[in-house]
Image 1 (spheres, helix red, strand yellow):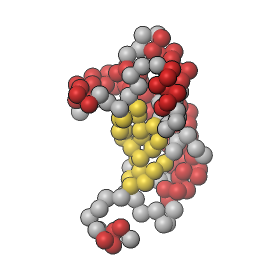
Image 2 (cartoon, helix red, strand yellow; image 1 turned 30 degrees about the vertical axis):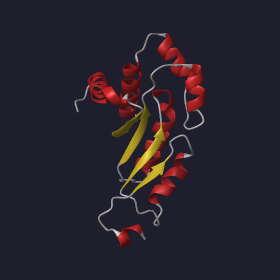
Image 3 (cartoon, one colour; image 1 turned 90 degrees about the vertical axis):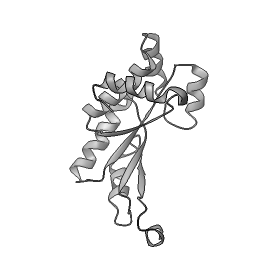
Length: 150
C-alpha cells in the first residue's frame, strides 16, 4: 500500500539476531515482505555467536537483501545506565563491565564490535548513541580502530 502511494519510497524491515535465526530469515524472505533492506537489533562483540548463526542462516537460504547491523556506542559500564538500557535492547552487562574494567575505551569497545561482526560476515552497520557534539570525531576514531575509512 505504501508503494502504491509513493513508489519512490525505500522500504526496510527489521531482524533480530538474538532471536531464532531461521525464523528471522523466514520473515525477510516471506513473499509478503517488500523491503529493500533490513536493520537489526543492536548486537555486540559479546553476541558474535548469535550474529554468526543469523548470517549463516541468511547465506544458506540465499538471502541477498542488504542488512545493516545495529551497534551501540557504550560510553561506560555504569550499572544504572546498563540496567536502564536493558529495558530497550539486549545489553551484555558482564562483558561490557569486564571490557571497561580492563581500561578499554568506548571507541575501542565499539570498534571491537564492528571488527568482530565483520569477521562473522556482517558488512553494513549503524551506530546508535554517538555523542552529538563530537559524532564525526568519534566515528572517525572508531573507523580508524576498525581499520576502515569513512
